[in-house]
Image 1 (tube, rainbow, N blue to C red):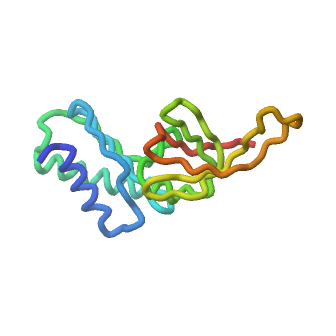
Image 2 (image 1 turned 180 degrees about the horizontal axis):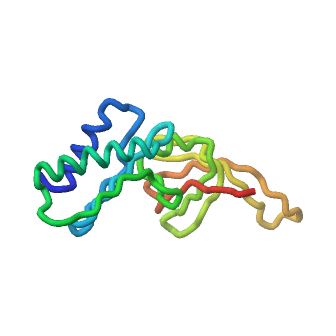
Image 3 (image 1 turned 135 degrees about the vertical axis):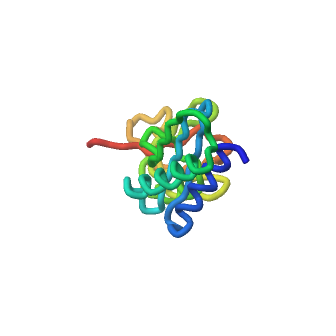
Length: 157
């Protein structure tokens, strides 16, 4: 079993009694840096991250899986981290998002719906050629396979 698979197994073992928590991503960089991104249906706290970190770190040392120094980071995905999993989309329904299409086009609006294949976003569109500059609120269904990334938008207004 490789390092990444063992780290995933250990992290899943630790959160097995917490169905509200889930692993977003595990990265092993040059076998010297291990990053575990945790999230939860109601968010994830620093205490949860610390418990997973202690559990994974302890077992990596006990099993002597890595014979050199490494850095273990356990955290929640930051605001700059794109949404990846269906559970992340579901928990962010009602929030503002920025959707970047594979074509480079961007859509900013409120995430209304999300399923395995698509998301629906309500956003403002200015009518082309109209004499008024009034924007109209439209709902766009966007296929996930046409999306480069989706990030939650934060407004400080």
